Amino acid sequence: MATAAASATVARAVPFASPSERLGASRDGPAPRSPRVPRRPPVSPPLDGARRWVLGARGGSRAAVTASDDGAPGDPEPFKIAIIGAGFAGVAAAYHLMLRCAEGLDDSPAAPTATADALPTSRRRPVEVHLFDEKGIAGGASGVAAGLLHPYTPRGKIIWRGVEGVAATLALVAAAEDAETRLDSGAAVLDDDDDDGGGPHDRRGESIARRRGTVRPARNLKQARDLAKHAPLSAAGGGVAVDAATLRAILPGVVVPNEVESAAQKRTDGAPADAKEVTRRVENGTGRPGEGAPGRGTNARDRRAAAKRASCEESGEETAAAAALHVPGGVVLDSTRYLRALWNATRLLASSDRTPIGCVARVRVERAVRSLTRDERVVSGGFDACVVACGAAVGSIAELSGPSCSLPLTNQGGHVVELVPKPGAGASPWDERTPGILGAPYVAPLGVGRLLVGATKEFDAGVGDARRAGVVDPGVDDAAQEAAHALVADASATYPPLKGMEVDAVRYGVRANPPRTPAGSLPLVGRIEGIGEGGD
Image (tube, rainbow, N blue to C red; front, side):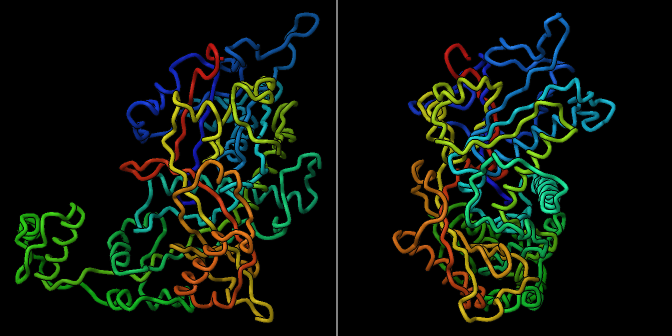
């Protein structure tokens, strides 16, 4: 979650640049360029047509305000949005749209939350959000993902906008928890005609978020050194580099590799050598003192690493190392529970007195949307905008997968397993106070005595694989059975108490990975204009 790779595309009926012009070359031409990293997110248009402009449908042919029989202005027509995909991106987009309508704020960056800019509820344009997903809320890869919330890379660096992203996500978590509390206590009621696709694994009543922190044990010496190297920067996100003794106190029973434990106990000492001279010798192929040439065939990373090792050896210096990165403020989300609760928060907001009469939030668990211009549900719905947030399944939408519009995404499949205590084991081997474990594999607590362990990485996944996401039967699926054995064995090697648990369920999902940029793999968020005949 620190690094969610969800993609969201907004398709609007405005005849400007073609999709190929805005997203890069077609499949017949050069590969699309990586998206730019914006310095700040663009300010989106207001949802209230009465303040500054009118959001019209189908090229502006529909007025925002209707007229009564006597010619006087009547109730404003709703602003209708179709959202395709009910995962992290789609549900969050739905909530934010309804929240903006509830706030009724002007979009001035100087005062984005000033109550003086709020329009009276009666003057605001109501919002209708229609969420399309053939599997329902969290039915795809988002429901399979572990909700390990933190702002770090595996090396201990803070990812691009990581701290801000965690803060924004925690605000959504708070809204989801509030909705769950109100519904469970009877303080709020929702109608029962909105089937979100929930099944027997809902875990209703369990916590949405577990605030026990997270910890990333170093799997090898290189990672241990990286965690120590980036420790000063990690502190900005609340992370702390710890030694082996502290790691064992945080995570009793964890196995610390011998090389990591030994290095984490040493301290640097001695004057550094002339790093430039060492680098020059390595790059020129002259090698380190007393050794043959390392060769010119190594890449730049290998040469830099060799130079660093040579510098440390000549000075007698030992590179600092850490046994783990502990994030006390890390949060573990039950992704499925969180998304369903956030959708309920959206529905409660739509029916509250904070939003104008006519606001609607509806999930449509129906067949997949495969075209934005030919699907009768989208065409006849009169939508002002369509948000595509279906991750890897975007490849099955005609307008976003043809030669005129090729999104730079790479599909990656993966299996995860849910573990429960073995029969007769007595107490669960997992202490409820234990933090979530980051790494490959990761371990995320889902509830009392239930853990999520994952994930495998399968890079040959296609669009068809994305549509079969969900619970799979390892008894009839060889890939699932192999993945389950591998995950349990690997996780138990790092955390042996897991040997007292067994597989209760295997899940499969496919994520859409965006291209790497200097700032990392960033979500693709943009607007495609001119889809359909005449840009309609």
